[in-house]
Image (cartoon, rainbow, N blue to C red):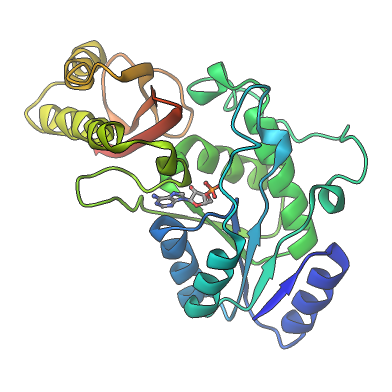
Length: 282
Ligand code: AMP
């Protein structure tokens, strides 16, 4: 496995791999790799002949006052995990390599970047779309792998690739959870023991919604009310939003029907957690 830090090096290694007409897979990450990331890498290994993992804590997707400085960066452990999983190359550029000058060219996926997390994180998805466009241009993968855990991000990247005719496929992999249902996240490290316990309520609330839909409830307001009740079991959970939206357009819906996304964002201590489920409702 090669570890490269420059755009020139990664282009060289990937283009050599591509010459053997191999399918190139890219797994973009911010590092602090866990089972969620591993599932993406495993999917890439299965589908592609050559797998690149990028590790880059992208400053342009963090707002002022967010956790850019304290975001975990256990690079050696990440390298070890990638090696064990059979990754071919890690691309771990510096901020200067990715943004040699103050960035003034942005990819903004309008409308889809505004609801849900876009409300409290203005500019976040512009940073995400821009860095993904840059990584796609640098690595030129045939396929890139994303997690359903970040559902809005996945919808935005799929739309960017379609709108800009990027010649590649986006694969979205299911959310990997811990035993009590908490979605794996690099930010779970910020939770103390009590917060970690209470964090499982996010998925419990989503499961409650799924159960109620199964029992015939269709009104979003009723589902949100029941989810709120579950989250209120913890005094530490500060709900940012509970939203029920169309899974493609991300428009709020009053009645669940067709492909719907039920998404939660909440603060728990210093951690901001998100989770979601996607359902196809008759
Ligand atoms: P991050 O390093 O947080 O930017 O995440 C990199 C990729 O891993 C994104 O596509 C995430 O959606 C995905 N990911 C993060 N956590 C999980 C999880 N628990 N299950 C599946 N994918 C995940």
